[in-house]
Image 1: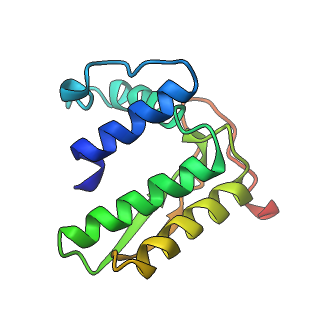
Image 2 (image 1 turned 60 degrees about the horizontal axis):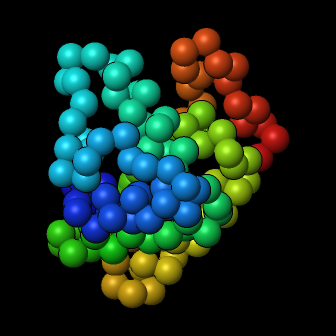
Length: 133
């Protein structure tokens, strides 16, 4: 889907450059992860999520996903967000940024996108306090 598109790789490279960082692999191999090892994929996911450094960038990423979905003729999409991949943001910041990005995309004809927050802890991390949202 849209997160695998070349424009998404370009966006992630731009976010990384703003932080003085580089992507973990060349753009054409960015998403090469082991299909056999979930921990490899989760480590990769944590790494690429860390390139999103501001709520504005998170909103841009959400907007991009909704616009790309619309280009693929997807009318509605529901995404799962796990806040443990985004430790640089509070849960209210995640909700506000993703909602703003989805709303901007909808106004431009993108897919109608919603999200569900996943409260599941990972790899020994404590669950995030969902009751404080």
